[in-house]
Each structure stands twice: as C-alpha cells, then as structure tokens.
Length: 168
Image: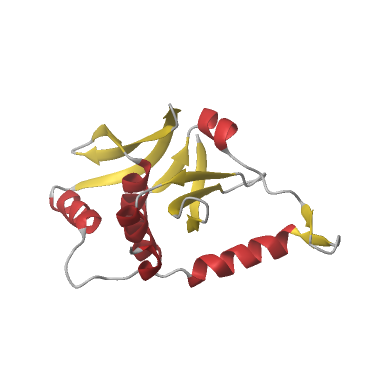
C-alpha cells in the first residue's frame, strides 16, 4: 500500500466532472485521478477547507455515529480498479475488532479527512493509474518550466476552488 494525501479536487474541463487527486507522500509523488460525483466533491472540498456546517452533513453524521459507538476509522484504501470503476474500503476498529467495509473512494476519502485517518492506494492501482509529473516541461515559448512552478500554480488553482464551483 502507498500512503497518499488529497492533492485536491478539480473539474475536468472536457467532461465538466469533478476529479479527486490522490498524491503519494514520497517520491516519485505519483497522482491517481478519480472521477467522482458533485456531492462527494463538495463534501471533500468542505472537509479540506475545515468548514463546520450548522448541521452535520452525511459524512459528518457517519463520524458522529462512529464516535458514539466508540469506533474509529483507522485507515481507508483505494483497493482496485475494475472495468474503469475504483473500489475502496474503510477500516474500522470497534471493541478491539477490525472491520473492513467496502465503499466508494470518494466517500472513503471524505470520511478519512474528517476523522484524520490515513489514506492509502493499493500498489497495483498506483502502478497502473498513478501519473508522475515530469521534472520539467516546456512553456509555450519553448522555455523550460520547473516542476515546482507547475505544482505551485496547480496548488493556487486548487485553493481558489469553492463549493459553489461544483453546483449545477
């Protein structure tokens, strides 16, 4: 398993669909893009922004239920891709017993962010779907753009996204 973090949620311009970006924590810093639904994108974006809604949203409610039952999410993992569909599981610890629950990656990540649980991607999924940014790319004038600049611009873009950007 490869530990990852949420690099952000962006909108794919071709399909106008949200894409969850999971980036491995160590070199070579591959990114796995996963298309997700608009409600899940909003839930992840709100969790990343630490927005505290006046009433619990669905993922907040799930975390409250787990807390009430003295259970905790220890990790979530994107486990496989089958016919273009990503699968994940949530690992819970309750009464000293580990439980593995199948879930969509978007829901798993939304819960992991809220609970502080680690996020992983299976090695085979990372090897098949992970993309590495080149150390450098050329700009429109034939000059070289360094990876740090590209990543910086991408992070600035991600910071500018608001939940309203995902509404129809």
